Image (cartoon, rainbow, N blue to C red; front, side, top):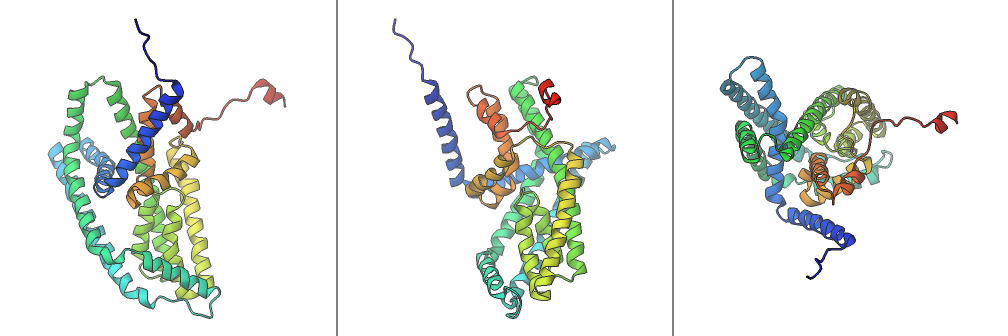
Amino acid sequence: MAEEYKIPPFLHQIVIISVIILALIGMKYITPILGPILLSIFISILIYPFLMWLKKKGFSYNVSVLITISLTFILGVGLLAVMIMSLNQLIAALPSLSIPSDSFLATYANQILKFIVSNLPLDNIAGAVELGFFLIFAVIFLIYELPYVKSRLEKGFGKNSPALKHTFELVNDFIEYFVIRIKVNFWAAIGFVGIFWLFDINFAILWGIVTFILGFIPYIGIIIAAILPIIVAWVKYGIWGALGITALFVIVNTIAESYIFPKLTGKGLQMSVYVVFVSLFIWGWIMGFAGMFLAVPLTLVVIKYLENFEETRWIAMVMTTDDEPKEKTKEEKAD
């Protein structure tokens, strides 16, 4: 009887990594479709707890759905309208934005401003409106469908399915983490809008919305959100005004990220800082802005998936970190 051929372990790992890379490259080619769909799923999952909260308050399921859908539509259309009006005003004002030549580093600042303006997709407002309405209606339909999706999954996989149990646990972790993220981003955005209003910085509400949205992008989101408001302050008040706005940005962001956020979360998602940072660029390369926005949840999905298989569990372990403090050994205590 011929011996059964086994793939060498090293070749097995190479095949697994190659499949992962091919899957990521394949996702890049369907980004125009995949990005909006994943965004709508993500937003729906975040809104769904509000529906459940209404049910706990005594409303019937149908009434809870109606209230949730109505508020989602009103809020979505309202935000879209504010952003479109603000962007139209910004487009009209951009040609006149210029830092006075006698200002410190004015030449370099104007070059930066020119680069930013030339790379902003301001000529595609129609596309942004189309995407906005797609997200609004996709989220509304998904909110209505989510309970049925859950029951269908339980019917298909069985209520005691380990894979389904892990999926629901992951969704609950998402909701808990990102609901807190929404609260922190909201109060930080309120703080930034207050600063912009106090200093009479143009487009204060637009900058507040932008800081709220970009706050979901770890580490670099708030830096990106700060660039244009700081330049507007530079145009209006000179270098010292720009430095003042920068300092206030740092103060508000430090309070939000170093005090409020850790206090609410208790502990993080146990992802390596390096993995979070690199994931921004990987998912950004695959799906553009939507990928950077969804970098953390998508990376968590990948980690949880890799944990389910013995061959890939080591990759998941490399991507995570243990936040629990380790007890010192007797030798360490003696030192």
